[in-house]
Amino acid sequence: QVQLVESGGGLVQAGDSLRLSCAASGRTFSTYTMGWFRQAPGREREFVAAINWSGGSTAYADSVKGRFTISRGNAKNTVYLQMNSLKPEDTAVYYCSRGPVFNTVVAGRGDYWGQGTQVTVSS
Image (cartoon, rainbow, N blue to C red):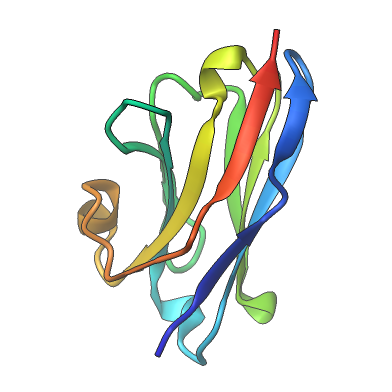
């Protein structure tokens, strides 16, 4: 059974930075695409960013391009989301997801999901 555990969320002010981490169990982490999603209260879950198995391909939602950076450390079975210039509209629960196919993960159809970490940005 694969487990994904997010951490690094918190309460920050607009303009601040946070780095989220998602630690994955299992020995095949380096073969999977990883993605970050978020869900704000009363809203649908939305795609934030994804990174392929090697880190050579990434994708971002337009709303976070230029502010967020996804990266991975395969030796540590961890994917990261560096979030800079945070805005109140970034407030949400952030989830990581894993899947074998890049476009499938981007579409929100990963095969495993974490429990989420809360990010709150005050104005």
